[in-house]
Image (cartoon, rainbow, N blue to C red; front, top):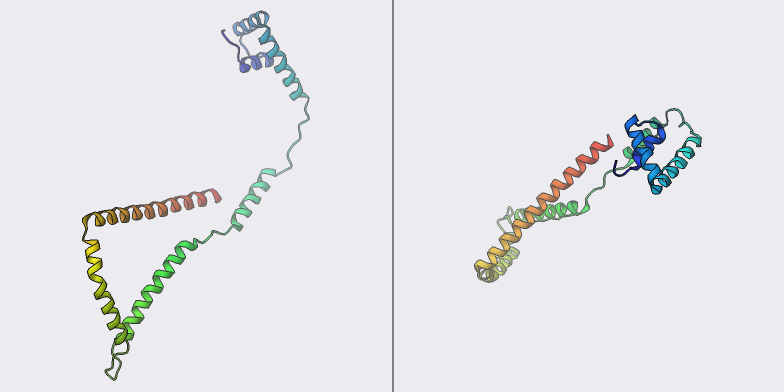
Length: 176
């Protein structure tokens, strides 16, 4: 035996070694003072542990702890992601605004356009700036950069939703 581990020395103390192992351990203890010191320290720990009082846990202790954990986990309400709620709300308000503007711009029963001045002003503004937008976005490098950034954004949103869904599933699994 080259080196006696604490595990082997503990087996020696507990009398769990075979006869050939016992002879090797005794031989090593006689030859090596460091091993003897480790053995004495382990015997001291063993005696201390044997002298300790063992207290029994109260009846149904585990069940009561698990019930308390279960009650607390049921009391925790999931948090609402206000970021996604606000984005969806803004998008909904925008769509609703477009629909209202479309209905208001329809001629009323008298044949007079109700939103015609606003629609004409919007058409004029878009017409003036449309050429500038077309010139800016006609550059292939700009289109490539915008396309890559859009793709990265879509992938990030997808991965965020998947990570959130996986986290929620794991959380639900552990709270059951």
